[in-house]
Length: 241
Image (cartoon, rainbow, N blue to C red; front, side, top):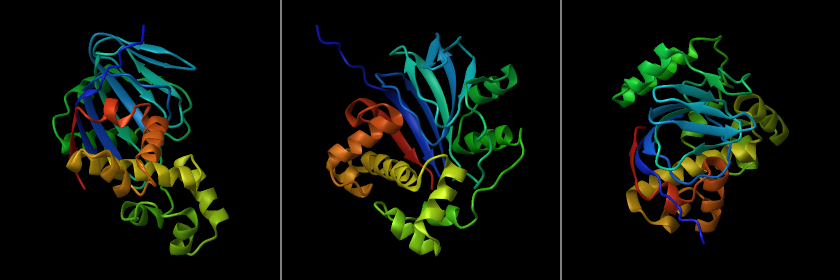
C-alpha cells in the first residue's frame, strides 16, 4: 500500500538571514542547509534524525548546525524552528559546531516566548553572543541581499572584483559551501517568497532564477527535504526585508 504523504501546516516568517517556522511536521527527507537550525518541541516528542539522533521532549530544544544532515519526525508533531545563516548581521558564529547541541532550559523557554519578528531577531543576537564574533567578508553582505536571482559565480566574482577561485574560498570559509551552492541557497529563498505571493510554482521558480519548476523542486528537496506541494502549499509566509 502506498504511504500517504503529509503536508506541513503552519506559518513562517522570513527575514534577511533568518526565518521562524511554527508548524506541524509533514513529510521530509534527509537534508542539510547553510543555516543553523534551532528546533523546539511545542507539543509531544519531536525526533531529529541524522548520524546522531535526538528525541526532544515537549519544551526541549536542540541546535542543528549548518551542514548536518537530518530529518524531523514524526509527522503531525508541533515544532518551532528558528533558522539563521551568515547573512544575518554578517557574522558566522557557531561555524565550528559539527553535531547536535541541547539548549538550556532558559534558552528553550525564551525561544518558546517569541511572539514577533523583533523577538526572533533579538533571540538570535543573544544566542550568537555566546561565542566570539567572526564576521564574513565585508563585501558580501550588501551584495548577496540584493543579488539578482540566477546570478552565476563568475558574474558575482566580477561584481566583487575578485577571481572565481578566491570567491569560492571565501564562500566555503564564510558559508560552509562553494559559491554555486550558496547562490542556490539564496535562489530558494527568493522562490519561497514569490510562492507566497502567487501560489504558482512556475512563477515562483522564475522569480528565484531557476530554469523551470522541476529545478526549483529539486533544490527545495535538497535544502529543506520537502517538495513545494508538501512543504509550502499550506504554510502562511510573511516576509520581513
